[in-house]
Length: 369
Image 1 (cartoon, rainbow, N blue to C red):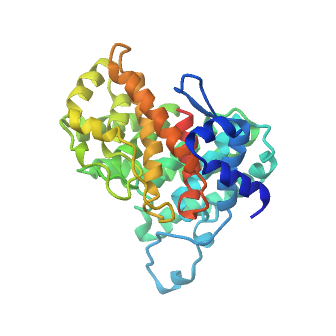
Image 2: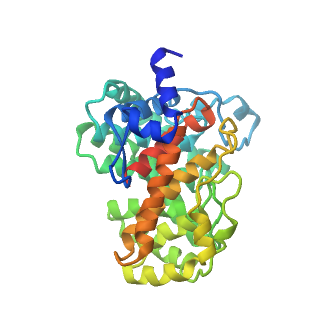
């Protein structure tokens, strides 16, 4: 490890007061209500996906082997674009993060390296192989359902929203994969009788949030209507949700907050307010606003709880936007979201690949909400 990485590691694991006051990687507003990355902080976080996107091993391929011949297939052979970062979905949201950084901070020292990495990942032949995977293998129809599907649409949306020749080229190349993912969503939602309410990858509400954002960004009204209707089918009548039981030991999503983050997109403000007032019990809401305890960041599963803090932060910020200014929960949610960020950001990139391969993109998404 070089001296620069050692220095950055020390800064990122310092106390929150020291982190906020002394290092050049984040800025905290004087009133303590806003946390932002500086350009140097963005450079630091960019190193995380830059390191892992082309790192094939260790790897958790999640491929269901159908024949003996498939045993010999490497992750890169199966997924020439998204083989790194331990698993397919983490690679996809690592790519989203690099696109976001390149679009928002075009003058970083890492710009040329980011473009080089993305140019390779977004080669049309690589992305066609990614798209073909979902039909080539009989049991691949449910691959990465629905977490990976959601992040793929978020990546597509980010490229679509960027008026750049590179983005236009990459977006065009991504379309075979995007369209097959959209079709998988359309095939699955009508037959998904019950939503998944866990705090990990298959969580239905989280996936539908990103899918709905994509549908609206691309003006795909048929897909939007399906998502809105299924959201109401699953969650409109939910009351007194069991949020007192959150979190489970490896959650990186809050099951209840993800539902609320979806329904704020589905319902008009006044209707959402009525729905939200019945959704939580006072005890459940109080519990959700507690900072998760992460006992061992070297454990690949327990470190998920740092991600839970970050996803809670973006959900709370979004929900607060929908609440009227007279609602005391608006300020409470905003302040709690900032607290989650302040307490969790110093733990990003602590030298444990179990967190380093994905937490940066969660931090970037939370800070951009």
